[in-house]
Length: 449
Image (cartoon, rainbow, N blue to C red; front, top):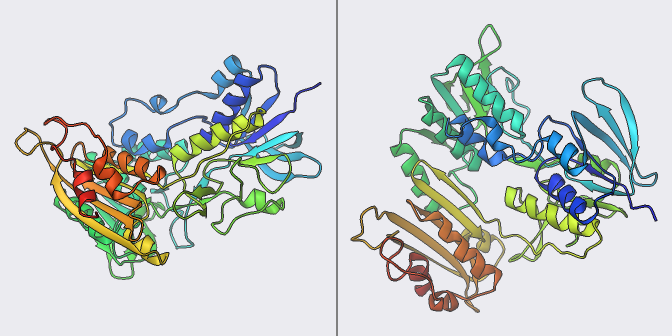
């Protein structure tokens, strides 16, 4: 009996994780991957650090090139190919070769949509100017690096104070560029509570970033050559020789929607725990698809590399004939600005309040190591618990070296449905170079019991 032909739309984390899983299980199955860009299996999260000059060559961001998939795994990866339509009844996709402009149809027995997410670019005058960049696929990161190398900008404006905005502000500062960050929100890091975000804001300012909040981008002004020269907000004009847009992302779900495949309230493709869509024989994975939120017990859209890779493994397992379910997400994320580490998981206090949950929240500031040990730095931990049961709902950490990865302890506690008392009782490691005798996470938990 002939094995089913698998077609995958998208050749990055989710798509290629799934393709590799299927190939391991089925050495002879036909697998075709259409990728509209030139790269496969790359670290988009590494782009700011490459731009900063901290990564030695862009090739180090690529886990596996298209030719490796083709030659060593017999996966038919076709780069510079854009899928323009899906026909779920005929079980075909319409494909355009970007270079030749020729179009054709490809049949499938199983289809995985792994189209990722696209950066938000509002209809603001001047966003198409030279020197205005959004980060998405690897090529966009290479373009930013090349632009800096070619034009040596002295001033930059970063629009948006989320993960990309903060990481790019750090990268540009590292390159010796004067950086201004603007955000229409009243705080940076909207996924965190305002008291924790204030710690990030203060440090960024202390490190030399000019930050303007509650300011809306109105337009980008250009010079005679069509290159950006200024960013105009609703309050002022800011000189800028390069602009980075970090306004968030949206799921690339349009092609699924047009095919009659259900799209969720979040704007991402609706899937069940097996990552099956509403169409028979069609799966979706990665930044284009929804995920089940462990605490909220509903579908959400969270675009993170960790989620995309796990989605790919689950989808690939099911496509290969196994039975796997995606356990869910907490939105666990970590980043840094210079020496300050920033992390969060689960629900913030604001989210708990918005959800109508009866909660308790506590915040403590301690030290990353025993106070007397050289190199000890400050760490601030915030925990949110269910007021009645004591179950941990979320956590946030801002602090210096050794702070951020402590968020994983909190994420594990939430996943295990542990209470604050359980966290206090947990047998965590201790030695002066790593922690006080009471870890700051446990110290915070003690305040909630």
